[in-house]
Image 1 (cartoon, rainbow over the protein chains, first blue to last red):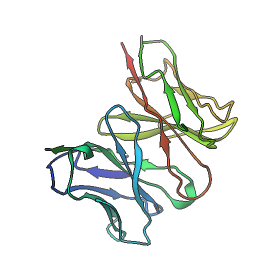
Image 2 (image 1 turned 30 degrees about the vertical axis):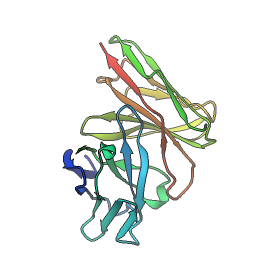
Image 3 (image 1 turned 90 degrees about the horizontal axis):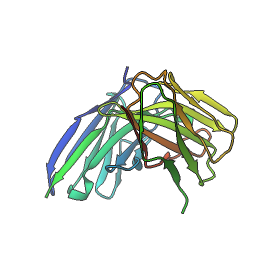
Length: 113
Length: 114
């Protein structure tokens, strides 16, 4: 049973457009929500993360929006660039569980020039 | 440069053979992890270790074994009992404790069973 559901599985966006990836979770104990970015042939790397005491966090062109009541969070990539083409994973964990992340299924993003 | 080194990058195995994937880190991290990546299923935790000489099963430990004899090393053995071992395997490390430390991943090992 996948505790973090991620959609879409794949996404094609034109250069300059907005990429939106959504995740939903079931476990109300989850209290930390990171996003990881993975380029082909590489391991994932932390991109941005949020805790539920805020509804939004922005770092450059990347923004996480968080809706605690709906148990949903999303990643927005503004002004998407071909270099953003990668697989993106959302994840979640309880704050008191160290780094025991539950990952979503991943979204393969392609940004067309 | 600090980081995580996984080897081999590609590995082919015949059915019925055990194979060991290497993971070494020089980040001085206490915790290490093994994940399995399959298309559409994200990353699933196989085993993790928070201190030397101790490790716990993750969500999909059946058919796998690990050891943690040194802080820097966390090898994963894929045994013949693993029914569907063809996958991309990722090793990660982090500081240990409550809170939200970053996971640092290696570049992965792709295992193909012939």
